[in-house]
Image 1 (cartoon, rainbow, N blue to C red):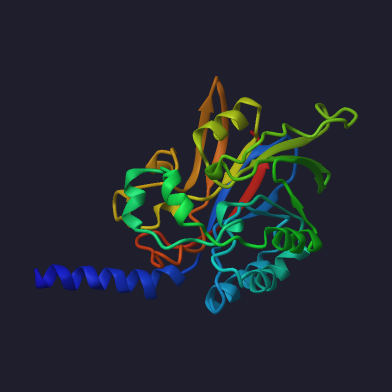
Image 2 (cartoon, rainbow, N blue to C red):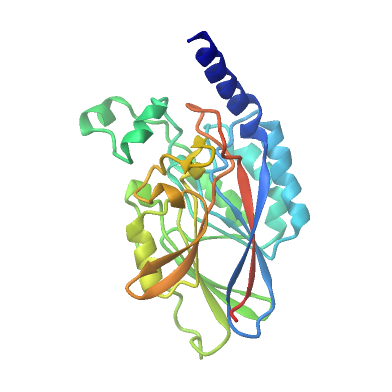
Amino acid sequence: MAASAAAAAGCVSYGVFVERNWFKLRRETVPCLPAGAGTLTVLHLSDIHLAPGQGKKMRWLRSLAQLRPDLVVNTGDNLSHVGAIAPLLQALGPLMDFPGVFVPGSNDYFAPMLKNPLRYLTGPSRLPDRARAVRQPARLDTAALHAGFGKGGWTNLTNRNQSIGLRGLRLDFTGVDDPHLNRERYAGWPAGAVGQDTSPHVKIAVAHAPYQRVLDRFTADGADLILAGHTHGGQVCIPGYGALVTNCDLPSWRAKGLNDWVHRGRTSPVNVSGGIGTSPAAPFRFACRPEAVLLTLTARP
């Protein structure tokens, strides 16, 4: 028993003091662009969960600008503290020199509450109304966060669509508010451009939480690429097995990485980020290093 307790304590210490700050860059190649198109690099950020004083995380975020991506996509849950907006905008400042788009997660609206991490083993259930009335999370200044992103030149895709031109290619975006809060309202693809279906373009769908209903909707409507986060890659994984939970209805084997999603005869590649941060209630990772993802988009064969 003593040996088991010591091993458990060692794993927790490793997860708290080593792995949660052992940031990595995952690289993926996605052949989703029209034939003859050049390559585009997309930096996918998610679940930063920044709190004041997280200097290592802030320095690493600033260093990502050295990658010089063509586009930055932020899929939400940027904050873990009411005082984190200014440090976050400072950390992401160098990346705002590049075009970007974003959608929010629940922790861009509300500060995390202390909760038992074992709750996640029972699935993505919500608090009962009675408990919710007692335990009200602190509201965050979402408007200030979004204004900071907008001032930096990033486009808000919260239940919106938008087209952006990059390197002679039109990128059509559709995004939704956080499905984990049931706030998503599908806006469809941008419309109105002359010859929009025949000119070179790619359709990119963006959401925070990759619930199956959202992936189904995006795929059925012809998304060439879907980007999401929320799962933290499971956050605590079993070596050789993987994630135990995703905190949504996504199967655990899809907790992070690039996979195909199939619905009604259509297929869309989905990249689920393992995320950069953790909840303050469970500040550790195990067998699931924090990550940003650099996607190289290439022409279809």
